[in-house]
Image 1 (cartoon, helix red, strand yellow):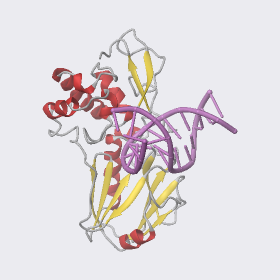
Image 2 (cartoon, chains in turn cyan, green, purple):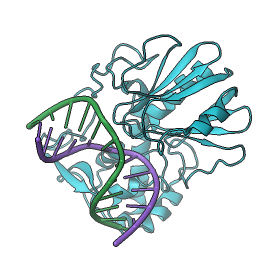
Image 3 (tube, rainbow, N blue to C red):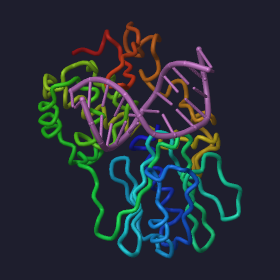
Length: 277
DNA sequence: TGTGCCCTGGTA
DNA sequence: TACCAGGGCACA
């Protein structure tokens, strides 16, 4: 699941592949017009140079020379695949961007949850997004204040991008485990000291994540990723996570057992022995 | 604030 | 063959 480190890695690869090049054409290979660019948006983007690629939370923004912006969200299984025009298309290709000098960038997305849309020049509006967790903007004071306003359990709160940018279901479980906080703890009851621990834990799990661990779903390593690391089937190495997906296994820290819990329709994994409310 | 929906490959 | 996974959005 691409979370912040993986999206950062993807944006970097995209930047290196296409910055300065000119879009020749964009093809959509999935029938969902709501998720991908309609014909008028594709026509408008053709002929435009790509001037900049940036990332905000899990959103990638491709800035074009005319001021328009292509917004891309990988959701669950999206990734970039890079090739040359004329090469066979990668598996699960949903959108294909070709440049005038023959570079081909494919949005590959096995579950087709991903999103690409065009914002007209000057019309870019992003949803409210909280601070980037690896920057100085992510302060304990602001994080504590935001959590204090939440009445529900803390784990679903961490998934709220308005609270902090880029945390997904996996790293939410991992960070709470690192901070020894129960995912069921009411967000507003978590003390400032524990919020600080959680802030540090979020940074730890994000910084520890080797971005290259995220692999394209077609089984091939993402372009530019080292050959070592995760298995080629896209799954994380067995020991990649401290708690995520380890339901029924022993806690890595204490004698407890990892338990799965459903919160807001998402799986949460935690140790009931060393993670306290 | 919680639930259901989108979507489809992989798994039981 | 049915079910599960998940990010973000609309809705109750």
